Image 1: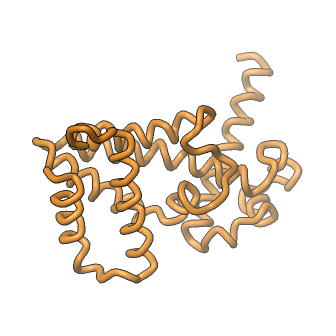
Image 2 (image 1 turned 90 degrees about the vertical axis):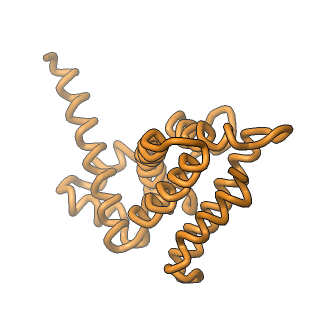
Length: 192
């Protein structure tokens, strides 16, 4: 291995460490606790080293969001691949989405609440974000219905899931009604 290859590998390792540490800190204490000073202390590198990887917290949030999008897409595909018909796939997708949001609140915030400097729904949208949407579209597109654009249907269903995830996390919805909400969403919106 050449010196340059070793340095590139070390740089990539440091970058992964920064993202993992930021994510861990955000999950434990919230995104307000994630500062470059605190990250530098935790990873035992100087702040200038941190800034050589990310220009600031916004880019770190973006990196966490991209990592989270990849994980969410995998979770959605895993949930839907293990089921039978369209109704079961849509219900499994909804449950997996809501479960991901509940188990990864800081990542979910990085994806959908915070400014990570990422473009959504545009030509220059990063591939992990496009793939996460594609993971929704793969299942929801097949139940959009005649004359309904699959992408638009997916956006509306996704918005409903996001609303449920956000309101549940904020304590605005009764937790014991989580499953009836999924069933209602699947039966009335997806109509499968």
